[in-house]
Length: 108
Image (cartoon, rainbow, N blue to C red; front, side, top):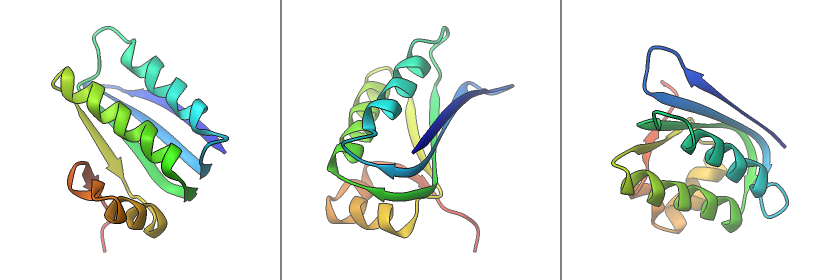
């Protein structure tokens, strides 16, 4: 798994890029990236999570995203899931979370 983040210059946001398997073994890395983003001053209004390179995501990975969504909502921020793979979209749909997240897909 590889995870990185960067502040989006000129915007009030952070981009977190995740690739590989996002599961019980790697979720802590993504959780740490969210913690770093959430500790910035000013706190970013939008955290975008790039998911186009995620090959697998389990319920632990989903839990990290749900936790981040709850914290963002509490501070009137947003979590945007960018370009999730079909596997990720399926997990979101099966759990009913596809309607809770703002999802941006690649253009057709």
